[in-house]
Image (cartoon, rainbow, N blue to C red; front, top):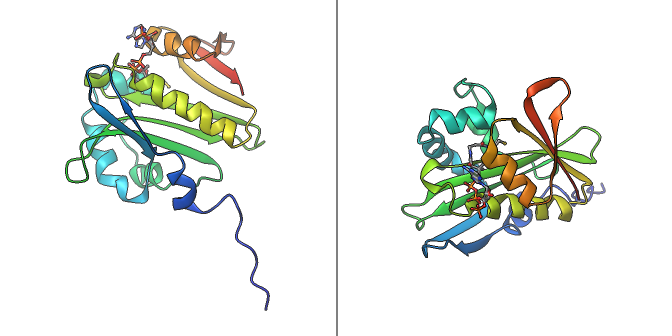
Length: 185
Ligand SMILES: CC(C)(COP(=O)(O)OP(=O)(O)OC[C@H]1O[C@@H](n2cnc3c(N)ncnc32)[C@H](O)[C@@H]1OP(=O)(O)O)[C@@H](O)C(=O)NCCC(=O)NCCS
């Protein structure tokens, strides 16, 4: 019997390890950026529970809590169709997540949609730019053509970050409270 070759886009750990790197913030704190792993459920749960209501609202555009099974889904990444990067501080015994950026590939396979959130205490310290910059590099590396996202039209922080990273912005024609962001890769 012939064993079918493994699909090149499915190995999780080797593929995921490609995204790991460290970065030093202006105050000297060392941040690790790496792919989210299956074992990160507790890390992600602590991160989400520490977020302000406002930051969460900006991220999911709703005030809903986590849905059943969502935490598992957020940490079981199928790298064939999504990438999720986490920024962490601390060591193996006290690792703490300070931001997460992720994209999911559309059904057509050419485009992907991103979302990002940085913990309140870490905002305006450069982490968002690093995480989204790495996510853009990951999308390019995966051969995707376009990275898109949406944010509240009042979210000046996200809009400014997007502009700085080269996204074009336009109002959502279906909903004036939303701004659409798009980057040709
Ligand atoms: C938007 C967000 C991801 C930015 O992350 P961050 O780590 O604070 O961003 P950075 O420190 O890397 O800032 C990079 C640039 O973004 C812009 N920016 C970030 N926050 C800003 C704010 N509150 N007001 C104005 N500009 C802001 C600035 O241009 C900044 O550059 P500068 O510091 O040189 O002026 C973060 O504020 C966040 O998580 N908000 C809540 C969730 C959210 O809104 N997600 C977006 C929906 S997908």
